[in-house]
Image (cartoon, rainbow over all chains, first blue to last red; front, side, top):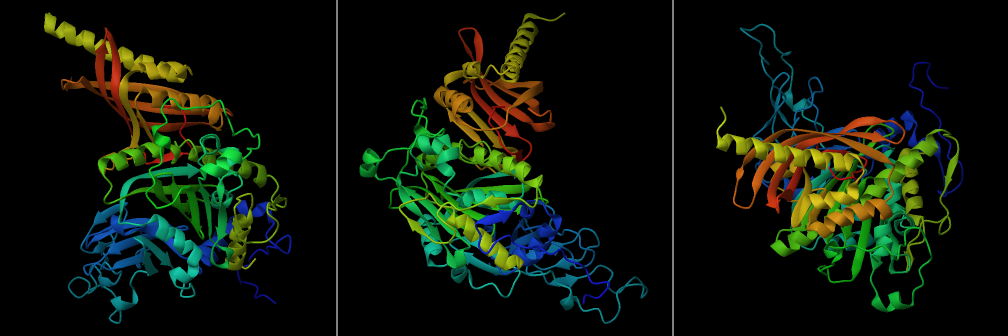
Length: 415
Length: 163
């Protein structure tokens, strides 16, 4: 029996034995959103924070989010990376309110509580009062009131944070198949070419599902299909990462196969459509293979993208139950020459909020949100490629990675 | 009494403002096939956030290098891309002729774009500055460069119609 004053949590019953049907309430229930903060974002997950290249010098900081939680990432005097919740131990105010900067210490502007770059509280204004009056109690110990710290791991220049001691080490968390693609793409030191932010008018999970859904890419996106960046008849596959939580969908250009392949007639294959200037579709092979498109997710909300010569990391931040913000950091390599940078800037026309491909992902999630929220107890059907969560070679006509996301989500959420 | 010099400045100011006005009406009236004609052949059109611009980062949301890429933006919007129907209303002003740098007139101006969705939902979609280089081609002013700087770093859902 529950104590009369214990907080009551809604009972959420999953509709079936597997992950091939998902109830619509996952996209619209505020209690689900609250539980996700506690059990998923602050649970046994690694969340992308930022790049080492963004905070290279001692004192550099950047603010970011893990779910709803505001986070500060710092490079301290020893060059070590720290991540803390951006919330003063005193009143809970944001300490860093600018997106980035450089500081010797972190000072809350509200009452001048000062923390070092590792989040330790170093001074409290008027701790001893004025002329012996006022001030904190004598037994106040600053060491007990530092900022809440996150575990940090860095892999190939990408900084990840975790709230939970139960999260396995990062490479165990993603598994060897996922590590292999990161090693394949992030071959050299990175540099930031720019940022995008795209506000999406739907629950965050719809974007993650869309990213893991390799089945839609050629059906929705004319550019993928018409210009042969991604066709379901091209080579490639879907790899499922550790525990089923992460995925990689990739497409490989194989000139021999393209001659014999028959393309199914769909709306998105427009043989008549062509570009006046196709410079942006040029692909300079730089990663040692013919892969034109590799989209990888790291559970829960990170995407690593290589489309032709555009490389980016995407971080998804929930903004309430029915909105989310997609933050793109578009990358090049430190040793890119001017010509390579120019090519990356041109091919970037495919991605971001105005991207020929990505803009359509911005629009389609809203359609699902509107369809779904009217009837929370109805369900989606995710059975392309069966009901299992398993890798598939030579085809991307599968929703296995979407089922894998729900597997991870349910394991974290205890639903 | 205005001298000849001042008169020619006034005429130039008027011609520049007329170009800005025609450009805005062309987009807002959905005459987008005419939009590339506001540019010379080897022009640059770029939409970039103020954040990237001020950080000295080169990447924007849209980058058209040459008139072909401008035309492609419109043909994609008409025939290839999927998005919900919507229209813009541009408010352009504060047109400031900075000077002539030999390659053309450098002109800065401000804009606000109100977006109206097919269901009636209206919002301030974008505001910011145009940083232009304008050249006289056979008596007609055209853009050789139009840099659109968005004040906000965030775009709501998608940008398909040019600013």
